[in-house]
Image 1 (cartoon, rainbow, N blue to C red):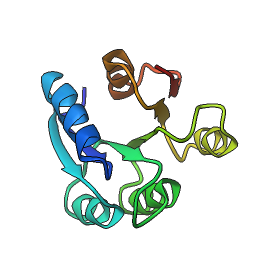
Image 2 (image 1 turned 90 degrees about the horizontal axis):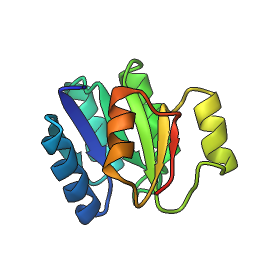
Image 3 (image 1 turned 90 degrees about the vertical axis):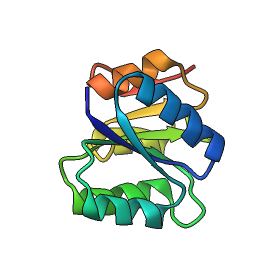
Length: 127
C-alpha cells in the first residue's frame, strides 16, 4: 500500500470522498483541483500513485497524465471519470500504451480503490 497518494479532481466532493477512503486505508492524501496544481505538487513531491480525473477545467486528463509522467515516470496513475467507461477507445489505448495503470468509472466502490492501490486490479472497474 503506498504511503502517499495524490488526488486530482475539480469536484470538491469527489476529492473529499477519496481522501476519506484513502486515509481510512492508511494513506496520506494530497488533493488538488486543477492540472496546474497537480503539476506543481508532483514537481516537489514524488507521489507513488495518483488518481486523476479525465476532465479538468484547465487541461484534459490524458494530457495531464503525460505531463505527470514526464516529471515522475515511475508514478502509477489511475484515471477516474464519470464521462468515460473502460471500453472507451481513449481509455483502452491509454491502458495498452501503459499511460495509465488503471481506470475507475465514477461512482466506484471502496474495493475498486483498494485494488487500484495494491496493483491487484485488472485496470478497469465499474460500479
